[in-house]
Image (cartoon, rainbow, N blue to C red; front, side, top):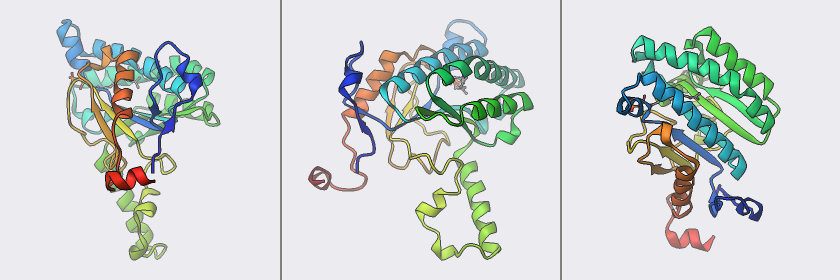
Length: 258
Ligand code: FPP
């Protein structure tokens, strides 16, 4: 029943002790960029800019530890309603980041994938996402999944539309729809559900992120604002996860008997 990877002794030889159990899929709600900037009397975009540095550190650390999938909530469907200058600044930052980090992806065998309503993104962001997706398509060390213009309800609605159309066209029997077949209509059907969801800045909401996929995820809340999220804080979150008992609806006795 466990779907996480037991860390190898090779990983233990590094400076930070590797957690006993490394999640196969980590999802992160990167929160607190605005507050980080406000505390320093800086414009909000400076918070996002510094948040991009934390992205690099966490990507590198996940790859080093053997996490197979890392999903980052970079921009939600609700974020489109933010002030225009912040939305524009974030879009420029995505273009810059995707441009500058391609080398890191190639060097570390990391495949970039996007999930969300990417048709709403400015062409420059879409082109850069597509370029990085194409250039890294064959890489197998880790999937870095960027949720951009992403909403969990939006994803479920677009899945429902496709399912309804298939039923209308006689290609699908509504009674034959199962949890497994439903999952095939989501953005990235081949990616397993997250084992661990981290949200920073002490916020405890899911905020419309991966509503279907987070059904059994362990949630760890970090008090740290995202731009200050360090490798050490990431390790602290991983250790909290490693100490949790995951039961998937079973009893503790059943889990121990497996
Ligand atoms: C939430 O903080 C953060 C975002 C809406 C954007 C996340 C984007 C980055 C970390 C930039 C770089 C990302 C990539 C993938 C290059 P907030 O603005 O809601 O913070 P607040 O709650 O303190 O106002």
